[in-house]
Length: 132
Image 1 (cartoon, one colour):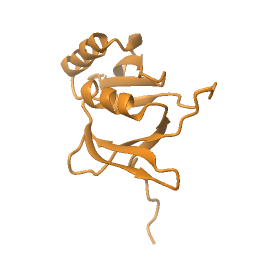
Image 2 (cartoon, rainbow, N blue to C red):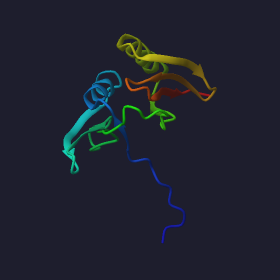
Image 3 (cartoon, rainbow, N blue to C red):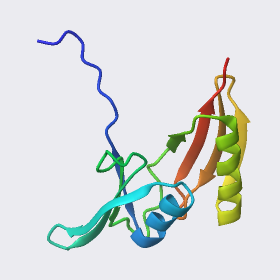
């Protein structure tokens, strides 16, 4: 029996009102690849699988079904890590050009971050580690 296994994050999914719009944003602006797509369940709800790693079937899934009158958004934030400050600057420019609402850019000491909102108002972050 293993002593103290540590899980690794495999993937996460979220419900969306407009799956195509969300998939376009995460593909065109964030750079994720659409790896698979289909309709599932008894209601044949649209589902898109996406990944930053072409060897992983999916790291991110977007599924139809978010209610229009949901009120409170349960997503605190979705974070994506890049390798360098230059890459982070590129994402800032991409986000600005896409019209995404940028909440703020900040240094945390151990990381530089850009916080923004996706097309359905989910708070997201792109960050990179600092050398300190």
